[in-house]
Image (cartoon, rainbow, N blue to C red; front, side, top):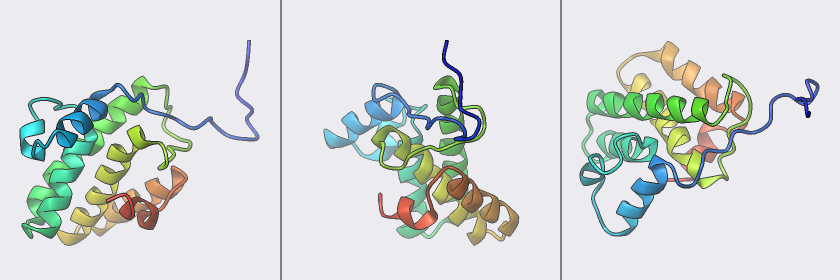
Length: 142
């Protein structure tokens, strides 16, 4: 029986490649638009993150971005818990299946800030740090 080394903290959480974000990536790679991917992979954090990022940048609609990002964030939390995450520990940004959740979390921080929800924006930014990454590192994934 192996036990977690409490001095090292929890092991990194790695979402499976064949999960909802994998389905979304396949549809996006095949040329589908993010809105068209929602019915294909509604549990994908990635597709909701993409919609949030677009609403923030192209559409200039932080309210829609907030709704999209919050959906992606909660879908990602569900996936992380199924993968064994217990509310803390690294969620590596260099692991592609984790990137949808992390991008949704960053978009949530940005949208929260844009609608004046500064406390939530700060919590989301801290969550990224607590996950072993940063806003800047996740922004580079776009």
